[in-house]
Length: 289
Figure 1 (cartoon, rainbow, N blue to C red):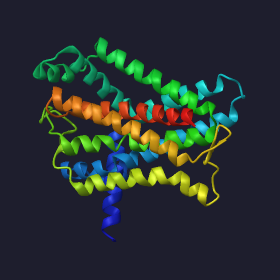
Figure 2 (tube, rainbow, N blue to C red):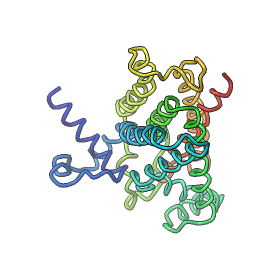
Figure 3 (tube, rainbow, N blue to C red):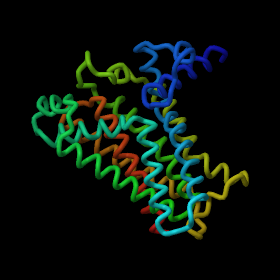
Figure 4 (cartoon, rainbow, N blue to C red):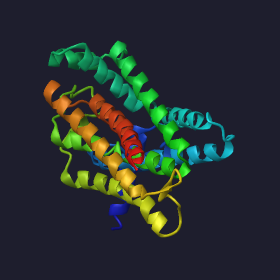
């Protein structure tokens, strides 16, 4: 145990360093270290990075909801600011992957040509449209969630960040990496992801889903209520999880058919699609109540 905890913390901080712009520098970076093996192990904590990003953006959203005047436009302002901060925290890493995938798969039906287009750093029409639509949908969905109150927004926003970062691990586990083995930064993440690694990611995800019902059971949070209606937030989160899982299944099948594998860009695109689907699924469940 004395060796496991420092090693796990190093892997977690390496994941933060790789997937975000949150500074892990100086002596801390030296302590964390780097190697392809460590980076591969850090993939297990990709959903854990979602915990950090989710907490930051959730606290910001709740603070803004409290501080802004209670006008019909307030939820939209909150959603736009939260999304902008999210882009800064990640350096638009996943949006860049979505743009490249949209350009590649939208620009050519031939596998090798699609992979060549995805390597091009320039953004084409398909990529620009995909990112614009993803951002528009994210802001619109979060604005509607914010309009329902801080409780449901906090739950769905936080868990959405975690779950959307679990599904790329499933893609890594089930598909072969087909990107540039020498130039791809994601190659170490793609090699030999183990069931244990997938299990750690699942633990991060399950803990996030159960967090809010557990807080409510302890009387520490009133998140079992939303929009003035009595309904367990767990049912909303499970519905959102189902929608997110369906979105992952579609992207996984698409990559398997078109590319016979995945690239690092595919992982970013998967995160983006699954995050939007999570928010949409939550709102669909709420609408059915």
